[in-house]
Image (cartoon, rainbow, N blue to C red; front, side, top):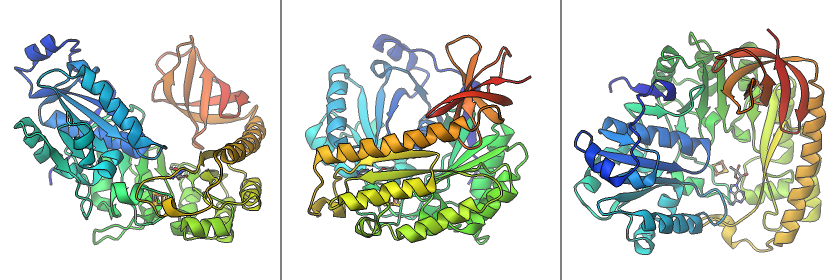
Length: 466
Ligand code: 5AD
Ligand code: SF4
């Protein structure tokens, strides 16, 4: 396989703005077509879209920024939210209104995999339905669509291959994403991912590192390894690199200053990862370690493969590090059968761990999941109440902890400039958002030391010390 090319947003020759179908026709003499790509969902989905855009660009398509101007509209969907399919069908209804003759629509991602051919039945104006496990077949599928086939599907989910692209069209000029493991082999009873993204497939470490070196060569200094269970990484190459070894090797690539990874699964989380962070400042001191519940009974019902105690032992490993490490988590409240006492266990775990951030969700049903048929649904109102209690507790912790940083200096990788004059924002190694003032020009992509002056529950405020 030849080497791949990464296109950075700022180095990309901007596609011609195409604002009307007439302009599209005029343009199409020189290009195969134009595409508009709308994305929902997690970072994995965002990054999948970057790779899909790369495939299209390498096939001679041009990207346009409004759907009316596109010969191909692609909609990369997510099913993590409640009623995802319903939302997708309603969006497809909006597209139908826009759709001109010769325009095609494709549905990608989790809802495509989940709903499959049902999409053609309910939205016959769609030409392509493709789940993420079939993206590697996109070039052939696109050729079928281009040849005028009406109902092209990529729904094969039983694969051991990963989605390797020649070109990835990177949208974030500061942080590059690299998927190191696709799919998921866990079987959490509430989760649709094993169904929509298929079985776990890890990429060769040599390919990952080659991609990383190339990113460093084009100027990226921060990388984030992605996977639903990123630390379950199992190198298929003879090198058999452990996940923690991959982190260390990545941190040593010249030009790379920050290595991040998400999402870690507690069962596959070991001390070697903490040791790697401790020994290599380029590996960011932030771990996203979803707990989902503080009750062992609920964790068993969720089939999370660890107990409350085992999770807390992983936290103890992290807290024993010499570098402070920020820990964030995901929590589901109101899982079927969750009692008040079990919810209280979640609250007490939150007290114990003292997270830097919590993404909390009210349990809601997903198609094809084991929890669908579980009895004792928690009433919606009670779920809402539990969520509010959890949010309030966490908000106070965050405020208290961030306030302690007042007067200290943090290193910030600058992501952008806000609309207000002399105002910039970026992230600390902990992954905390930092908003700061600076009269310097041209800070984008630079690392600066910021003196913290104030905070909100979710961000630090500060000033650039020159
Ligand atoms: N209901 C509520 N939250 C869910 N999540 C996944 N599936 C569900 C569901 N059915 C949450 C989990 C996961 C995060 C990405 O989304 O907390 O870690
Ligand atoms: Fe879903 Fe569980 Fe896999 Fe995470 S580990 S993607 S929650 S099945």
